[in-house]
Length: 89
Image (tube, rainbow, N blue to C red):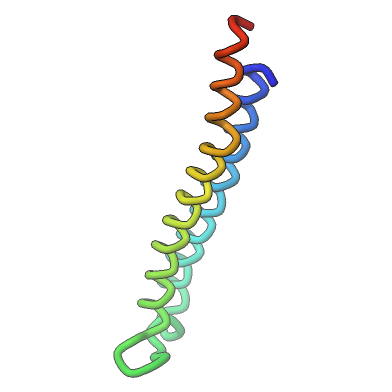
């Protein structure tokens, strides 16, 4: 795999994960803006749905970051090292 193809692959993964985080975040913001009573409903005393979903937005961001780091360490970094060992392309 050449540098250009590897770069495109990394870009596709990054765009996909960014899209996931953006969808989760903006979905949460839209719920806050347009479904306030729903977000204020209590799940258990002291914990509303809005608080729970807000925490899940943060966890989703951490999860996608974790996934990208694992993917990059397994696929991207090893492929870059292999390409560097082959010399100029």
